[in-house]
Image (tube, rainbow, N blue to C red; front, side, top):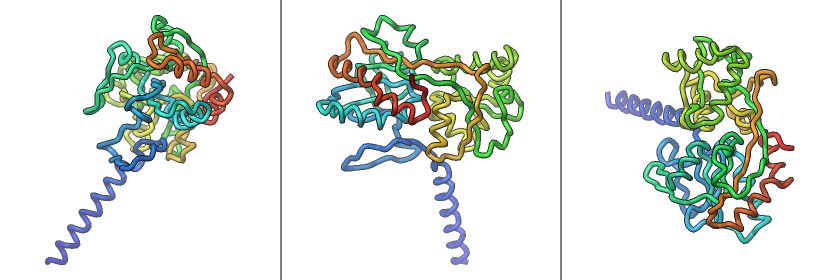
Length: 304
């Protein structure tokens, strides 16, 4: 009897450990974490993938549009190489609408951490920066993008385009247009692909019956929902679908034809009251350089 109980206990523990590994096998951070004396990241509990670098006494603070998280490691490393006087850099890659609220309000709290840093540079889609010109002393376009559909590996639902996201059997992960600029752009693409009726189906009917899930931070949630079989598909920036395949996560991409797609322009703004004005200027110059453009191109963005 004892042996049976021991075997049962071992099986239960094995199942629990396997289930836990399964639950978190694709969790962020997907970037390379900076080295420290103590490396302490616990998937699902203590894990802050959208805060980067040195939060204490930074020499440069950058608020990046969240979908550019994959570029940050290379960008900051190359910037430090070209400008060795800046070694303490702090960056955030949260949704641009949330970052805009953080700028206006002066703080943000994530878990138990309250951050009151003012950014030196803010990047977002052009439509967002155009709404807040009073904050910037200089703006520069630096990269471009378009939409794609992220699906599960092998595309088991046989999704061919945006119209298929209106199907009752397709679970959609959709950026919330309330704070994600891309959500509004995707809605425009829905109208291009299938008229107002397709948009209403996905954004009203399917939200109500819970086959469309509105994400809080789409550049993390959409791929995780797809990989963990919580959603079948999600419209994302092309660069995000490209990146997940680049790091060999179990996703695939469905491209969207140009006549149904939209174009995005990313703009960087130097804050008028940037706490580190010279560092802000140096980073703005770097962001429009050929070196930075090559990094963005590496991760699936379009450069000119």
